[in-house]
Picture 1 (cartoon, helix red, strand yellow):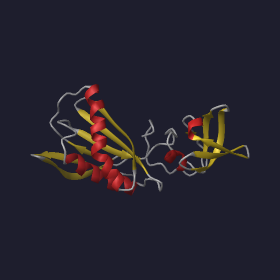
Picture 2: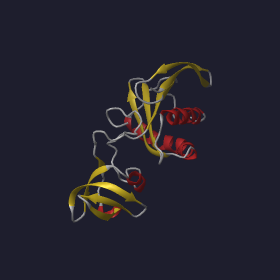
Picture 3: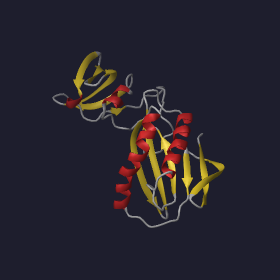
Picture 4: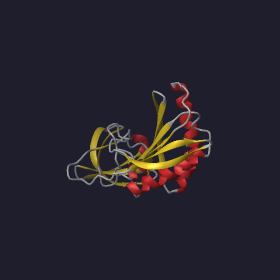
Length: 203
């Protein structure tokens, strides 16, 4: 199981103390003076946070899938979802969590709010919307709605920049991404799951 870090405040910066177990993904808590903030402000902050952490994640050979900030009383929860062609191990998540914490602490992007950082990989229920999502789903059974074909179920055989090849009941069919809606990976019993510690909402 991953571990988180709880930090006590110190003038001008945060300092680590004893690690605390986390149920799902690596997390780090950064105390700051609490100030109330509304949902509109949080929405604007997500874009600014992505600008700060995006280059750090890219330098680690990963993709930034989503940034979500939610408010819980006087505290914020910052959820960052990352992925890569090789997957995201617990060690990968812990390493990138430390780098993101350092990048966030070096800027005022989180404002004057105490917050907890959680880093995870996408859950199996993440919609397949980009070519990289389909590429990483090769070998998986998916369901998708195709133009002029309706809902279909098939196994992903190959995916490139232009489209995807599905095995549909033994028939190899090629689809361009423009003809496909968002794909959904189907859970198969006995199929190895590589996603990292997703919680109930897929993150």
